[in-house]
Amino acid sequence: MNPDWLRPDWPAPAGIRAVCTTRAGGVSAAPYDGLNLGDHVGDDPARVASNRAIFEEAIGAQAVFLNQVHGTGVLQIDAATEHASVADACLTDQAGVACTIMVADCLPVLLVGADGNWVAAAHAGWRGLAGQQGVGIIEATCQRFSALALMDTAQVATEIIAWLGPCIGPQAFEVGEEVRAAFVAHDAQAQCMFQADKPGKWRADLAGLARQRLAALGIQQVFGNDGSPGWCTASQASRFFSHRRDQVTGRFAVAIWRAA
Image (cartoon, rainbow, N blue to C red):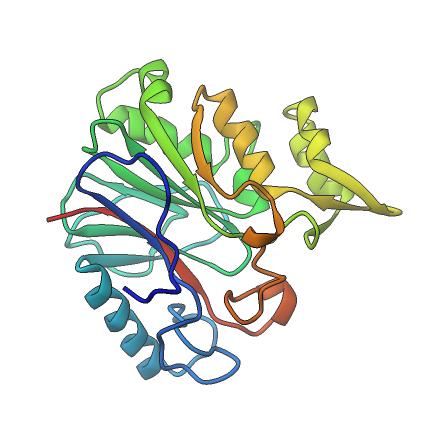
């Protein structure tokens, strides 16, 4: 794999592979340079196809790219799942099939059970993370995970291991009062993840909010993004795509799979 790509530092079970790409290693031209994996952002389709081929060859697995809509839909995937299936999270027990999430500021979340039989990836922008009535993409993914793994919720919580990838950091993610209200209405403790910036505006810690949601589910083994500047997509233009920073830009990917 490209040496610039991130390899999660977490105690995943044997046979579990995961990676987070960067801009390095692809063939797209500006403003999508270089490894743009998004086919919905205006890039040359042939270049995107080449980039996806580069990615799949590097990971040695079949990536399934979703049509992410900032919702809470969760899809079980296998080798026959079509690209652009509508969902914001996916999970599988099939070896050699990579649950793949595309991002350019939103938070990617990887999940694996301690037994390594199931893996999952979720796309957590603020809308999907907040969800409706306290059920967002993380809750929906964990519910589906527990059902498919034939575990009760408490057992899944103690056995799930999570990794949070790069996203827009709290120093750059300015949001309005409606975003803060969406989280605080569900959990008053969420207010500590918002710092007042200017009248009616707040700086939000997306990774911190995800950690709160995971903790509320009883998931304590959470690794990766801790909200520090090194994880911020918006502040690292040479390494990460950022929609908030550039508007027109590519997408990098975070994937998890069981080795075949």
